[in-house]
Length: 233
Image (cartoon, rainbow, N blue to C red):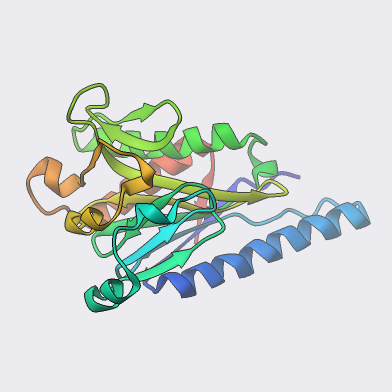
């Protein structure tokens, strides 16, 4: 039995460490349910979640990331009030902070489609469709997960970073969408380990502050469209 309902929970402002632990707890419960179903040969559905959150300033680096892409030392991080975590997601180094909408989909892909490549392309499509609502054209870059603007130009810049983990077709971690983000934090890293390309935000592109609640509503609308899902409270 496939369950295409997705429970959306807005965690508000929450430390990266706490959000990561909450994800791990939900992730384990979903996988435990799948194991029990297989063992007992029963069709009990698994749950799907989408957690939205805003983090205090933090740099995170994925399993394949390189520490030289962090341009600050430990004492400098402390002075600037920035946390740092090595994570179990894919991808390299990125920044999370106020003004950025972070989405953590914990989906059992057995409920949708069992294809991680397609899953990442779907996450990108959600962001691309959301950008289009604000009159901005987003694009994919081959081999560089995430969403970009003016990709094939000297002014290519990233507006949404992505990095996920999956086990037994259950996902965690997700996307970081720059809405009203202070982009100066990206000066302290080589974002996603990619040289020669910049970063941007919705506010910078539109030259005004953006209503983050409206962005969230647009994101959820397109999430349901792209994943052919239903949002539940």
